[in-house]
Length: 113
Image 1: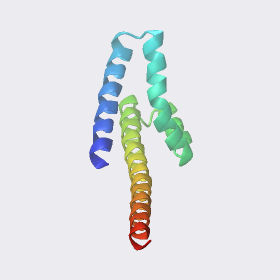
Image 2: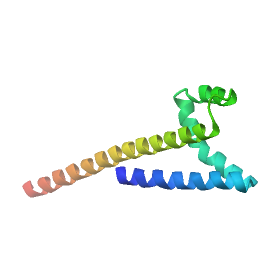
Image 3: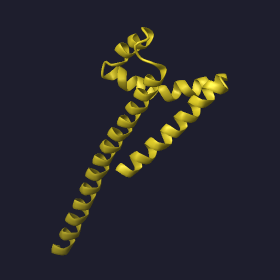
Image 4: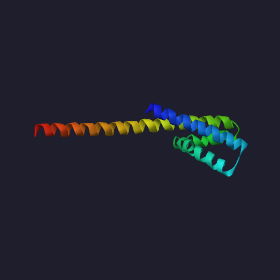
């Protein structure tokens, strides 16, 4: 679970860095749309916890740099990925446990019949 989340985080960050480099040197419409797509996950997560508006205000006031916003978005995405991996791991583990208990129960019922 943790390994998959770590790998997914690394992939996301590498893609993000690639898109950011492309956005700075080859600012096409496609690259811009791709950048917005990558930013939507952390933006929604920050909005959910009430941190997007203060961040936006600080950015527009010049108190937060572009690099700081990128770092915060990247960190937020990593946190979201790990939370999702944890939740999925708990659900899959619970389902597996349920199926195993049910199989054991059926096997013991057959043995006593």
